[in-house]
Length: 427
Image (cartoon, rainbow, N blue to C red; front, side, top):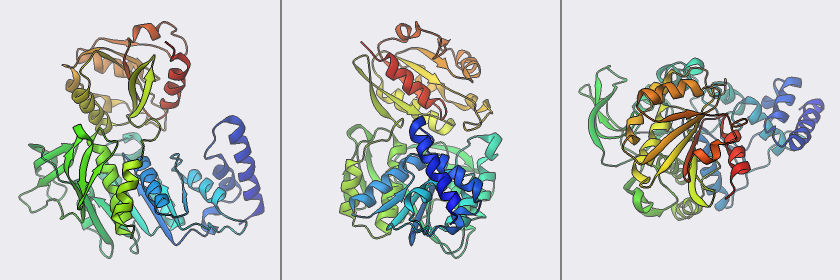
């Protein structure tokens, strides 16, 4: 490893600390000087990559928490810096002067678009794919195109962990050979309906238990159906924060079904890699959500929450949570940008199931961000009382949003919204 690359990385760390950010800057500078920097890093013998449209940051953090609880020394990108320079930053910070990461295991979140490139340089031993939903169409294309790109790049000598409730993932995984594939899932009663086109024959799948988006228990006359799960959750009770995994009852901080999907993904890998199930269960029960993911906050003395929403699947799951939980008057503050990191295309706003909350005690929806006008147009067409505002300029909005606002923000809007909450959160 070149001295200049390492020195540039150290300078990046210093600059990042001064600026209060810059989590990927060290890796960015190191790669600028030495493009093959990651090829020269000696990673631990066990390298677990986590990818997918939704849930990868939470699963990475859960899995890291489990491994730490089991006494492992880990290397991870816990803050979600998941593209090439983010991975390079982890390697730079955790390796010694010879480029060796002297840890027991590396657990790394990887952006699904960058996965093929990163797998060539990091050479993982295990890969978790949480789901593939429509997201950032201008960047990824359709979820089917993204699936083909990902699965065509997966090396043979890898342990693959697949969400068996996602027909797109299941179909692609069955086309692979010489992979050690394990399926996880959730057994849960849901609506019966036709849904996603069968990825094998094109006819509509029949869902005997539909969970959300394309996830659920499904079958097709052509013979395509859910695989037998190697690991699964059952007896799901969201009202009492409980579910079962294997033979163990779990009581954890859960409010939405997708949180259980994330937990089952992390638990599956940990148990399958040899960590005792009791250790895994205790770790999951003590895990707390990361910043911005169904995060409980206070607004002027009242309990409320904020959540990341960045595509139809995540948005609709969040609206379902609002429908189920919010029984008292509330307002909704939605922050949406259309920066490159969010996806410039905003047509997916029309796929949001706003009807889910039309009969809840919602007072109004307040929208901000660079894609504010596009979201307002969709909301007004659905019949919602809607108002746009600027975080920087509108000083009266604090009084108009009411006593209990729930905050939803997409990727690049999240930090601005949290800063605005902190600045204005006074009784």
